[in-house]
Length: 388
Image (cartoon, rainbow, N blue to C red; front, side, top):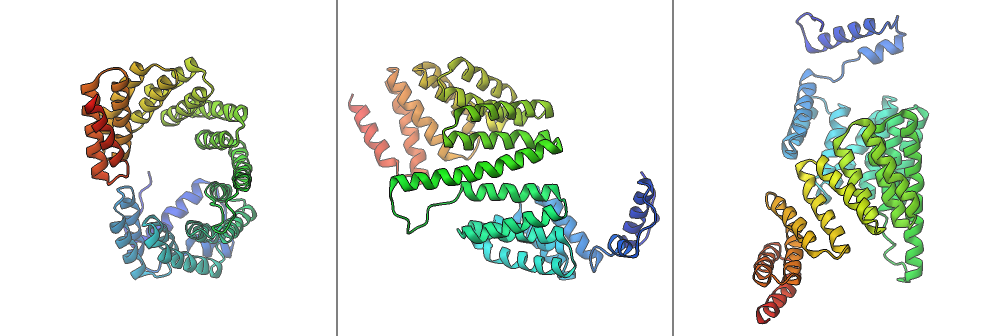
């Protein structure tokens, strides 16, 4: 802790900066470095204060409040780049209705960054504009923006900027739909799918290698797991298994229970598809031990899937019932519908007709609340079961 004299905010920030430079043993700065380091962060302290409020509110998910504080910050300084960047990102989170203003704010951010010769904000602006283009389906334009952001980050040796661009490029290929006017030839569509998955895997491999060089095991775990899923889609089961194991090992090294739970879940599902039942159940039970409350329903559902594949309906039903009990505490009606429908089917399979009908009626109520297209089929099944 260091005591700074009372005074205007920007003077206090300058005092803190000088103290920090002394602690780091930084000698005299060039005139250009002095200009950059001690330039006021905004035209007005009020811009900084409202931006701080926006940052503090962001975790709550109250987007309208965050947007309000950012707009107030820009009222005091309409060229305050951190507020422009965050406001653009908030508009992206609004969905389709927010993409047009998001693109405008990212453009303004890029223009100011070029004017001020700030490559970091230039890269942020390129990534942001790429994201907007990506979400509107403009693949080639999004690719060019992401590639530009990557080039800027490489030039400045900004490693995490490189990673952000690499991840966006991988996601661009993972989510690329076939052209609307493409012939609906199954062979060509499969070639298109495999091409994009292969390109995504190549970018993911680059990102994973970069994380390994950094020694960032916290990020390595989910990155390896995501790459494993890509290889699963490509049909490379051996490479996928090696990456699932790597994901778990990295999560264990980092001590992250959440990442360990996720890695165990995906590893258990891989073993399930390989019909390696004991290893699948062991991995999923380990997931349940580690999982946070919001993840436990997915883990129970995965265990249920393994028991179903093993043709053990009683054990599968027990897991579906545990999952449903947890799901009812939340508002995820789609998951509740899928779960209670499976419960109904398994109860009927086990000869528990009355309980099966009760579960199916509950499924119908949920389907009706959702306006689901499944409702007519469920009602028809209920009528059939009642006649048995």
